[in-house]
Image 1 (cartoon, helix red, strand yellow):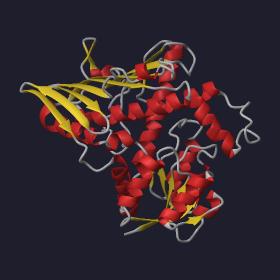
Image 2 (cartoon, one colour):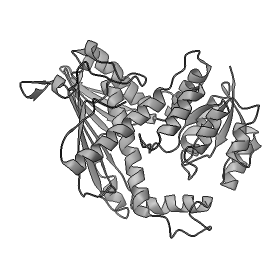
Image 3 (cartoon, one colour):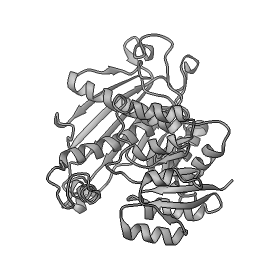
Image 4 (cartoon, rainbow, N blue to C red):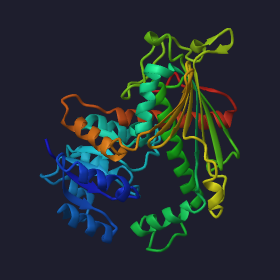
Length: 386
């Protein structure tokens, strides 16, 4: 079945991810309409895909020749395009901002759930060839994870200026070019939150469960700190699985008793999985050479029978009793193709799948609990997460 789709925004990853994927998947997707405020980019895409230019997202989602909508850009519109698409009965692929608030944005979540349409959030780390291969090795050679180290080094000093230009160009902060109301620190904090949510979801996906508790530490008390670290505790990945639901395709995790943290402790010792997640922007943008110097592995996983080092998208080095094994997976399908292929299956399947929505809100709830941990100076139990 060929899906007739409309594009809302083209975003920073249009040229590198979404455009090549749509070209390769021309047998599954037919781009019918495009709404984008960047005129030159819109004209190029309209010409390439022989699509119709549209003046607004409302006009796009109400077209009869549209089956699904791809929201590919962060903007001041936030959830309005996705909400309009759901109310119009169109499936939604969400590659926009993942900076969800589990309380404030509950109305949006309920709207998607009540609409009956398919919804997929863009979580690219899950679909990276190195991640998929790591999951295979955990099941076959390495055994269950015990320790996970996941760090992202960001360069955000100049990011607020770039984001500010994007925002003021759309007119959300007043007149064109008037950036006096744009707070660079808020933009920086929002980008860091989004990155941390992606890392949290990545760890949950690799472990296969939701964490039981979280503890947070920042370099400074401000939300836009230049370094933030989280410690996530998971249940034992190799035992006791019958007592709790798995983190697979967004199924909420639950414990069999009221104290989830106690369930993974025996004689005061934690026997489950510990994930250390950190995100930092502590190197100024002008030190370009320093930013790329000896970058840490995107993920390091210590398992029962070995250890693996992951560099996205397609490099994996792992060690076991036999020694070192190095795999380069560049020949695999690109991440964009895998994600859009999964979206096509979600839309055409008879079984509705809202895993991306559930998992994104789960990561947001964990991050919100981490902020509580930071302010109160204690580990926060996640057993009551919805």
